[in-house]
Image (cartoon, rainbow over the protein chains, first blue to last red):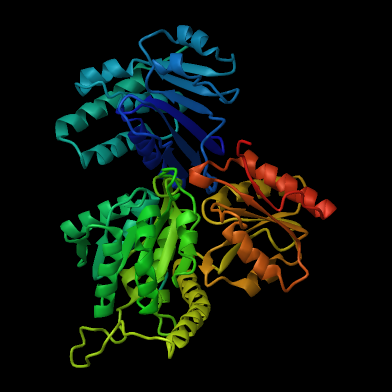
Length: 191
Length: 395
């Protein structure tokens, strides 16, 4: 693993993007790593574009500012591709994980991704509807992201999702989310 | 007491401070919610409801009442804590002076937020700086770990017989309060042992020894009271050092009156409080790699301000930029005024002042680089173009 991984999440209010960043941070604590997870706070409205960030590092994290040059960009809502430049500032070897039913090659063109950048797609919303019964794409996005960048053991991630959601939700919802993470991991496509 | 077991967790700054308060288990916590400190109160009220603490939670109708209830409870002999931010603190202002004048060691978690207007919920230090002269000890914290540790140490400092003053522990709103970071909690039993029981001096509930608090004191003795507050504040410095040394011995994390980061041989120095210091440290390292003798001084104790120690630490620098996340309109930034006072008796470095990050505007690494570059130039030429200026602001 690189010394520090910086992730930028793009989502819309109400999709669980901030929760995804938090769960990922918690899961990445394993192995004594240092983590940060923080959203950009603005007027909080369902549907409004939002960003959240992760830093995961072997070294102590001291900086307290948004990520400008992400190594990983996770887009939880594909309609944002038309609204903002999600590739802004992304590193030359950045990895994109996009929630869309479209083909990764098509998305690669849309993003104008460099040949050195990797583009992954996952139909996270469909998986969420199948597994949880709601268009809440954060859990499959977590699975897809972990397949794409292998940042934490999949068993650790699943245990953390279980732990984080276990406090709030019924067993059915927890099971649905666990299946969603697994399917995200299995169904993500690279292009 | 041996070295304790610790637990690494990923929590927000608010969760970290709430956890410290749970471990401290105060007798009374009056509070009124205000962003961004609300999370502390939310967590703490759940601790109360779930029987995790013995605290009597008082849900008051305003911050003025929160501080008033705290004063009553502390005067009665209880250990008291509260949490607030920005306008909430401003509404407490009148009572802040009563708390310190009565010499009540109340603990306040102050999650720093910009004061309105314009309405803004984000982190800056205008609230904390506004309480500068209220007679409260003020500790500042770079991250969730420091906020937690400062909170654990707070009662030991505030309640010390040579001090007996209220204490505020500051951390940056949102940047720290709402960000998840990895940090370590101390085990409950070790916190309990470290903090110890509170033995209130002259509590009102000691009904066998009735006494009066809040008596009228006019020209005859008012000045003596005020000088006594100053002396208690001066005493607090040594107590803070002693408590911090004991904390370091037990728990391994070392805290001084201020943090000196690569300061020993530094020629180009930045001074900043709270979370900005972390970002600055990374940039100081980058400039060191390029051969620039850069350094940082991060005050932890703002009241009592350690003038002599800060002066000694900065006097050999060539140029110092003091970065203020609060302003004094028509004057210099509040931290700048302290640093200038600390250096006034010495033949020290060239000083200048940057106001940054008001209303939570991000301090990015490239902003820090701009300041370091300018400080290098000032060190070379000895000349300052703008003594006070605003960083990354539209003209």
